[in-house]
Amino acid sequence: MAERGTYLDADTGGFGSGDWVIVGAPLEETACYGRGTSQGPAAIRSASECLEDYCPIADRSLKDLSLVDIGDIPVNVVPFPKNLEFIRNAITKIVGKRARPMLLGGEHTVTLPAFEAVFERHPDLCLIQFDAHADLRDDYEGDTFSHACVVKRIADLVGPARIFQVGIRSGTREEWGWMRRHQTIYPSRPQGIDKLMERVGERPVYVTVDLDVLDPSVLPGTGTPEPGGTSFQGLDQLLRKLGALDVVAADVVELSPPLDASGVSNVTASKIVRTMLLSL
Ligand code: MN
Ligand code: MN
Image (cartoon, rainbow, N blue to C red; front, side, top):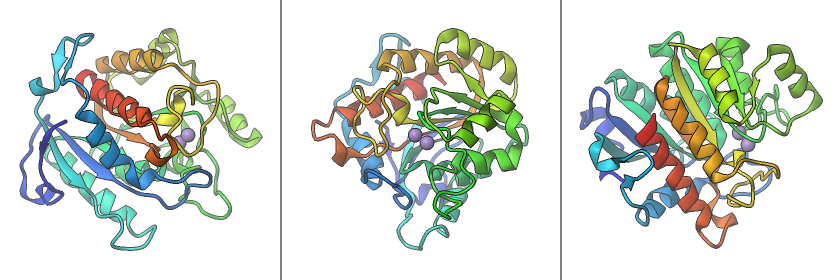
């Protein structure tokens, strides 16, 4: 997918202003149903080998981009949630050089420290979340850092007016009450995205894609599948539209390779990453 560097490049350079920097965070701590997110970054990279660099829809190639892959953040050397600091530090270094992180999860919890790091540099930062689930619980079985709470933690930080949610079809009565009250939900259709983009305006954006926003028939390799999701083309089209916004960081999370023996989910995830790199 990209020139291979190592995680250490985050310290030594190897990238600069405007570059996309791919970095993995193989975090698997709070998944409650299916396992395997720790294998996500490696599977996305390996599946990228079977995709062309060139995308005919965008008429652009990954070779046209300034793109570097700095490998994975060592999330396994200290216990959770202390290891979230490693993610925050890595993303701080990337945005500190005015480069754009493309973070590969890992479970959705990785978005919290990454968002915090980008928010420090961009105080007007908004979050656009593609997900089947609201992720707005205050805690999940006592754990406030669960992937089921990640968007609530970010809303605590920036307020609900900067949260934009697409594809949500599952949540508790309380979560749905919150989303209706704050009008954070947009339909996963082009008109919905137009409305969302109008509201975001010129502000900097962090785009997080929880792959379970796709229908499980399209991407079964995820820990908390939820029927009723988007098609591949549907999501692909919505993501391309976001290219008109000031996207300063992005992530793709919740791929669980062992849950799809065919390997197709890995290729699908990899193609979503390609779309984002080429369009955002
Ligand atoms: Mn989800
Ligand atoms: Mn999620």
